[in-house]
Each structure stands twice: as C-alpha cells, then as structure tokens.
Image 1 (cartoon, rainbow, N blue to C red):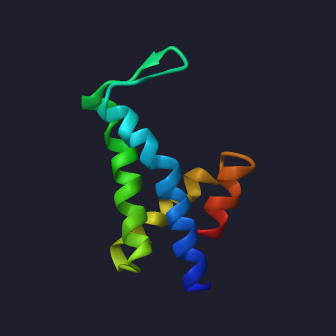
Image 2: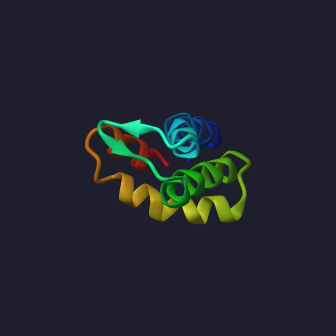
Length: 86
C-alpha cells in the first residue's frame, strides 16, 4: 500500500472525528441528542489518536487501525471507502 495514501486517509479520519471530539468536549447537542463529556469523548478521542499514529507510521497505530477499519466498512458508501483504503 502506498504510504502517502495512508497518510491522506488518516487525515480524513482526523477531519471527520476531530469535530466530534470537540463537540463532545463542549457537551453539544446533535440532532436532539445531548452529548455527555464523560461518556461520549472516548470513541472520537481513540479514533483521533489512532489516526495520528497511522499518520506517523507507527506500528501501534497501524495495528489499532485494522479493527477500526473493519467496523467502518459497515457504513456504506463513505465508511466502506475509508475503511477499505485504510
């Protein structure tokens, strides 16, 4: 796999999940659902940290990205594209 493509996709992950992390930090409301900082911060935080690891080409980032990519493949069509490329 091309290293440059992996970096681009990890930046997409950060661009997608970074705003969710910020919204969880400020307890925002999304489509009538109030986010709770103590509970809803963990998944976006984990995804942003793993994406940074993939961007830096670390071994732990790559291995943690595999299961995340498999789960994202369920979300057709964008999740399938991002998960498949990662």
